[in-house]
Structures are given as structure tokens and as C-alpha cells.
Image (cartoon, rainbow, N blue to C red):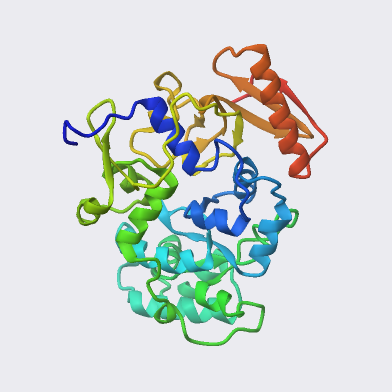
Length: 379
């Protein structure tokens, strides 16, 4: 718990501070690459969300900019935080994968029954050689590993390869306007120009990766820069890592501390923006699984308690609409029409702002001109 002398930050103050870090109070004049780095990656379980995330945050963003970065191998799609796919700069992919590798190793243990008799070092070496010859689908990786361990569970073999190796999804997968199967090779093979069919140098895998970005302490500082002010549990929720209290304590002399309205201690960077709680926040359309909505243990800084769970359907996330900085509805797009389902009434002028933002999104992402309608969304 925070000291009683620490200043209290109310929900709206936390909201405005987080939106400022997330580039959602006003669109930033920043390159897509710099934004991906600033946000410590973009949630990318599906192909299109990273593009919508950047449109909501950057002035003049065009999808071709991120697509070009992917094709030039400056950003990649791979499993990092929370065992989910993120779009990262190559540098962050290297450093973050090292930091979360312990969690991925533990994940393998959940499948140990299906891996009875399997030498995990041999599995990793065989899978590495296979995907560095040329990018492979997960089905192909399973088949290759089954040749060596025919009695093992196929899915467990594939999960082990994904956890033990830093596998990236190669292009054209993830490039706006293009399509392709999920095909995988190692991060280092892809980053050094390998990974094309029949090409790629051998060797030089994870042993060539160096921990960059300051380790855990550096990651704490970057998390606060993108998501703060935040508690230790907040960062654990975002990263999927545990036992982070020690890192926060090491950094305490360099940080400011606050309390939320429940007395929970929050840490922050001294020079990070903390706008006035009354700062205007324009409507923003966010895609499914946007990290803004997933990266705090207490999500009330963005999700009003009465709307908890309204932007999910089962284990699937729905596209979220922010009004005045908080979740206020969901949206879906089809055939040039954005349908907005509001959770509460808004003034006519706000509806006009929402419609204008939706139309701008359609135009910028190549789906316009289009229209915005207000109504219910099935499911």
C-alpha cells in the first residue's frame, strides 16, 4: 500500500494520464516505427488490429507505412507478453523475448504429459533447423517433430516448439492488403535476411540474441512511459511476468509514487505527462484486443464498472469505442459501413463527433468513403 502522504490520483486523472501515454488524447506526429516502440508493441492476434491501433494514435498514418516496415523486417509479429502475438520492432522482439522466455519455458510444462520421453533440447534443435531451411506452417512443424517422436502428442510438440524458439510470422502475413498463411522461422534468421524458401544461413539462433533495453528495470520504465501511472500488479497483468516488486523497489528512488482512490500504490516517471482530469478526450475507435484495455489489473481507469465485460463476447474481444476517454460502446465494420452500439446515451454533438471519427477511419484505412450508423451489433 502507498504511503498516506502520496498524492491521490482519481479515476479521471488516471484516465487522462494513460490516454496521454497511449497517444489517444491527440494524435501524435510520430513515425509508425517509433510508435510501435513507444507502446512496447501492439497486440496482434489478428492481422488488422495493429493498423487500427496506429490510426487511432498517429497523425496522417497510412497502412502502407506499417506494411513496409514489416516487409523490410524492421517490425515483426511474434509471441511475447501474456503468450500472445504482438507486433514489435526487431530490437524489442529480441529483448522482450529473452525477458519472457522463463514464462514460455513454464508454459511447456503444462504439456508435459504429451511430451513424455521427448528431449526438449533435441526438439528445439530439430525445429530450429527445419524452420530455418524455409518458413514452415505449424502443421508442417508438427509433422516434422512427429517423425522423431511418433508417440508424442502432436499439439504438445508444436506448442513446445513455439515456446522454446523465438518464432516470427513471416510476410506477407500481417501486411495490409495482402494475405498469406501463418509461416514461421526464427527471429534471428528472419532479421538477418534468411527465411526465404530454400535460403537462409544456418546457425546463429538465440545465442546471437543479446539482452537489450535495460533488462527488467528498463522494461518497467518503458511500461510506465506507455501505460502509467501503474501498480506492480498492473505491470504483471500487462507482461504476464511475476515477482516484479523487487524491480520497482530498485527503481523507487527514480520514480514518483501516488495512490489511487482505493489506496493502491502507483508508480510513475517524474517527467511523464499527467494532464488535468478535465482535459478533453475525443472519440476513438479501437480494434479488438487493444492493449489499452488489457494492460492494468484495475481497468476502471478506462472501463466504467457498469460496462465491465461489455466489450467481450466469450473469450473474444470486441472493437471498442472510447467517448470522453472511457469505454462507451462497441463497433463493427462491414461493406463500408461502421455500426456503433452505444452503451449509454450521448449528446447529439457527440454523436456527430463519433460519426466523423468513424468516417475518417474508413477513409484512412482504405475502406472508404463510408458511413457510420448507430444501432445494435449481433452477438
